[in-house]
Image 1: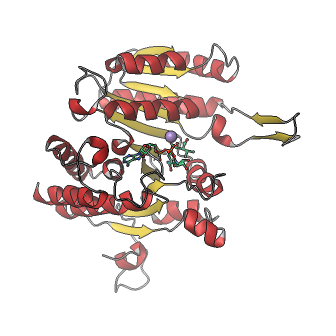
Image 2: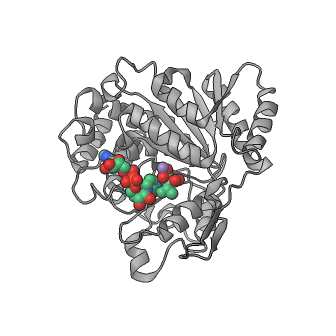
Image 3: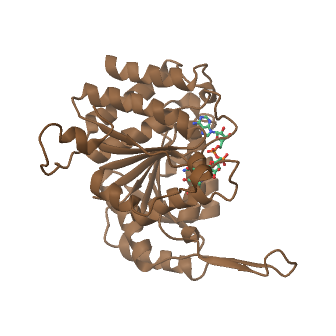
Amino acid sequence: MSDNPQRSMNAGRGPIEVPRSRGRVAVIPGDGIGKEVIPEALKVMRAAAGAGGRELFIKEFDWGADRYLRDGTTLPADAPDMFRREFDAILLGALGDPRTPENRHGADILMGLRFKLDLYVNLRPCVLFDRRLTPLNERTEEDIHFVVLRENTEGLYVGMGGFFKKGTADEIAIQEDVNTRKGVERIIRYAFEYARRQGFTRVCMSDKSNALAFGHDLWQRVFAEVQSEYSAIEARHLYIDNLLMQMLRDPSQFQVIVTCNLFGDIASDLGAGLIGGLGLAPSGNIHPGSVSLFEPVHGSAPDLAGKNLANPMGAALASAMLFDSLGWTSEARMIESAVRAAIREGKTTRDLGGSLGTLEMGEWLANRVVKA
Ligand code: NAD
Ligand code: IPM
Ligand code: MN
């Protein structure tokens, strides 16, 4: 196996056209614990791909705070096209470093890829693998099984706005909230299609249309329109403040939650909290039918970085989602089963009550995949 997908697929055969492999994965470990959990996820991926007889081509990119501080590189201009051309999926660790509090590189790399690859679906499953992991007393695995579908290319994240009289007592800071008809419709439609495909029967859209009378009025109108095309699916609306309260009070109400970029960010961390914490939560930044990016929901966790304490399960489960996107479903299930087995057997990192380090956790999962 080579780190260069083109070279190894073309090995010894001269300048033929490179076939479009279904397993060419670009890897951006990033910062902090991203650099610890991704190598473990790669061990697990390699084990599962090997067990399934799949060929996996990995190429790593060193974009992150170190590189940015060294030579100013964030996201090279040709990166989105290069990913579309040469890779089938992207695996990312996390971006964010205390040395660069303005997070310029993180914005360029993570937001840059989300926007430039038009990854409009941020899919964040919240599945309780073991009732011992939820902080909610008496909730079981049956009660917590939903996804947050977060609009991923618009809203308050577009970076439109500015300062006026910055640093003075009269300062004005404006941050625009962009909601387009196309953007809102495609994520809401995706939510209904996702529900139908996965056998879910309930979609809940959450906004703040009682206060945000323009942007979220659009969400209301589009939701009403799209839901009328899906009569078999129960459509419900909750304001975001109530949604978060209801998620805590009774998460079994929810199957598919669809919401805007910022609210989805917040709701998905709460969802992670319900299933055992950020160490366990995976996500996909998806453009259906095109190269997509998978990452754990968590960030670079500077409090844990460099200590071999981070849980690599979120990264491993993100790689399972990545495999699913390639159509490698049995290999994806192998990874999930290994994570479930680890939790069942109490082989976990400290965040889940165990005593394994990041490295040992990765080894355990990879060995489990091979043995299964
Ligand atoms: P964080 O997700 O890094 O950490 C939040 C809490 O969860 C911390 O207590 C941390 O120790 C814990 N945690 C996170 N991942 C864990 C894991 N794998 N195992 C065990 N515990 C884990 O969020 P934060 O502290 O708000 O942000 C830190 C940095 O990460 C910031 O620079 C932020 O901007 C960035 N960030 C990046 C991403 C991303 O790249 N997608 C996501 C979130 C935050
Ligand atoms: C996430 C993160 C990012 C976001 C930050 C790092 C900008 O919190 O992926 O959830 O808000 O999207
Ligand atoms: Mn977040």
